[in-house]
Image 1 (cartoon, protein in one colour):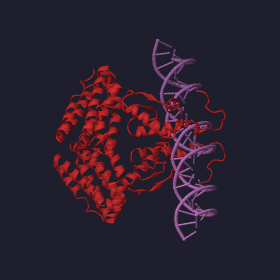
Image 2: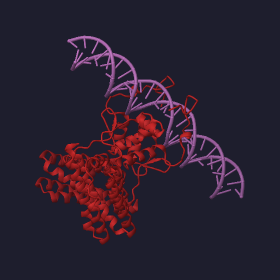
Image 3: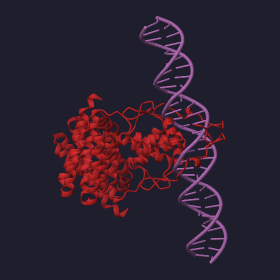
Image 4: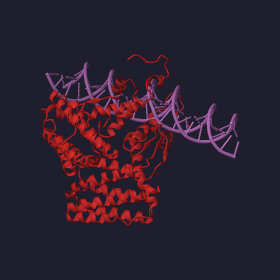
Length: 231
Length: 231
DNA sequence: CGGCCGTGCTTGTGATCACAATGGCGCCAT
DNA sequence: ATGGCGCCATTGTGATCACAAGCACGGCCG
């Protein structure tokens, strides 16, 4: 790229701030985080600070902060020498993360249950259709994105930001691996457990909801572990 | 501080690197994280990048990364304008974090149970004594530190790094609040549930262990919520 | 005497630079 | 032809600087 400034010593930071919204490092962080969580990056992919900085039209400083935050969350892995890659999870790690999902998500669902209006169920139904659509089109990224959106729409009603943050971190860590899964595997049936969840939601049946959520998560686990040898 | 270098343009980074161990930003991160998790900082305390930089004898750059990572983990709170404080948790947030503990820690304990040698139980007994000792001396920091050490010693045997990382993040968020709790409250009995945990461990009784862990965590919750109005 | 506003110090943000270590690649010797 | 070695480009690390937005304190006016 050309020099964006003619006077040698410094550049004007104000010129880069098109909008006064969130600061640059926050924007990179959110964008990268979303891309990783939704499986837009394959496991083992290499990233560089300068590459990302150029991609986002910024200097290394904010990029570094974003990358560091993401590596703390397990969304990115740093080699011993500090190189940045998207993580490759082994079977044990995947199992752990799936168990965390099965521990936390039923609780979130149960907390959301009393607050689940009809509008929410309608919305979840719509998302469910989008999932099926993405599955038919073989769009792995969209499939993952809508799948998580389905869960998040429900959990947002739980009024439990701390628990939601934790579970999103788990999703984040699973992001690249889920990408590989849905890339390789023939598309799974449009989610079956999701329909059970919706039924339990309508019926106000908490135990059934908890079980359905756990089943949904565990089903994904089996697939992830089943193909782990082939990766 | 005086200028550490006479030539004006740049300083030599090599002079600051006394040891070639972990990089500076990692050291600050770990140190700050430990201090926060173990309640060495009160809730609502103010920190500044330049202040921390001076305290650690570094520039703002690595400090910024450490602070950002910690704020991502919920160990530090940033005001809307970016000011850094140690978080003040409300009752709902505390309850959430306690529930997360009660969901995850029994699972970790159960996974550690088959691997719990005599040496581990001995060590946990010793830590338990240290807890009682700190309680008598009214040393809140040491009390918190040994209490977490007690749990961590057990959970390390679970061979579940991802789950351990998550629960440590929860501890981290509770750090300053626990500090305030143990500061105000008259010292609680030297942990009762810990003895039950040890008994269940010796007996190899998983359900009893799960219950004991959950009880230990929930007991802390009640105290935290009970005094929440007075903070 | 109290509330409002302006000014200045404080603080976070982002860019740039110098440096060291690493990883990759080609070259040379066997 | 292949394996080892050394050089160069790449990449992360940390320091420093310029800038803008705050917050606080003090002065001014009501």
